[in-house]
Image 1 (cartoon, rainbow, N blue to C red):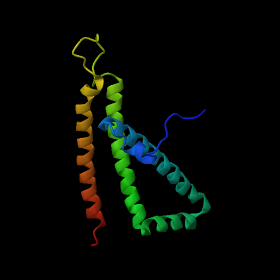
Image 2: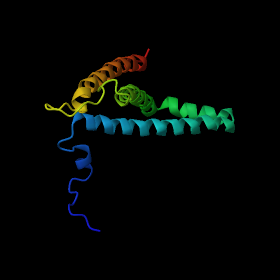
Image 3: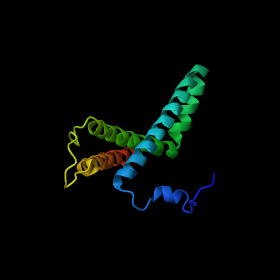
Image 4: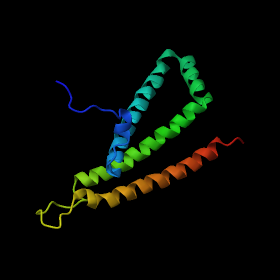
Length: 147
């Protein structure tokens, strides 16, 4: 079966989808952060499992991770991913329970879409994430300063 239209944009077409709204990007970011947290969790289990190899193996991994600034920045990114994923997840729970968008009603003109009702809450949630990320970033920079 052949496709009618070619995908000439490739990954750029997925990332920059033209008429995508902020909701679509938050949805994609929620999925990406979930996968990132899953990867971190699996890596954490692997490193923690190295304790079975003895204290030398464990200390070798800890020295490897503590010496590299790459992993310190990675820990901060995992924290940011967790922060976004957790706060957005609470927002999604409230949306699914109907607390934010309200009960469904009859479709009478002028139509009220649920996305319009929850968009303000989504923007406030992303603002809260941005404020907490800035606070955490300032704390991270303070902890990284040489003493």
